[in-house]
Length: 200
Ligand SMILES: Nc1ncnc2c1ncn2[C@@H]1O[C@H](COP(=O)(O)OP(=O)(O)OP(=O)(O)O)[C@@H](O)[C@H]1O
Image (cartoon, rainbow, N blue to C red; front, side, top):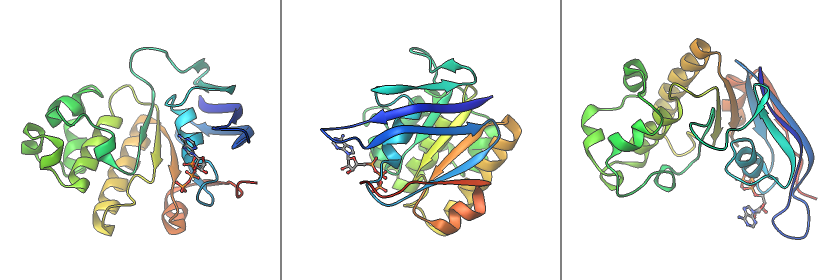
């Protein structure tokens, strides 16, 4: 059981950003992905989550390609939650996109019930990010890609969110890819770190 990127190559223009990349995250494993700005970490993340169309190579999740329809077992949370929600939906609807979350997750993430009756512009960035994390940890999720997921949060909130996410992963046997420029966070969370070099 693993999330695997096999032989992934990708370019936005003429020159290749990623060439024959291999990345494997076992179920239950927490892997860090680090590297300089512009080295292609977010692009790799989007390919693994099916948010970017594959140009070369394949993504396999627990032995199968990512599903073309229905709930994606690979969920991604990005740095800026306001870019990841529909501004015209109340947050209950956004949250339920991920299926009905465990009550304990909502409590662990510090989500106040009244937030769910508001629109995104009526919450702070940190409050909105908690909703995005809860949505990503829905019942069908097997792998989480956390791309600078807690970068914009204060240290206490960051610790609270990661404690809840790690508990979820341990219970679920879920794998996590953590992308961050914060080496200390990576060291604390991950059992293995993949280092990307600078773009040539
Ligand atoms: N949609 C796009 N169109 C064209 N070029 C892009 C696009 N998205 C990213 N790039 C370029 O691809 C390169 C890699 O970007 P990417 O966001 O994957 O890197 P990163 O390692 O995640 O960087 P950072 O640490 O700064 O977030 C950058 O040079 C970026 O400008």
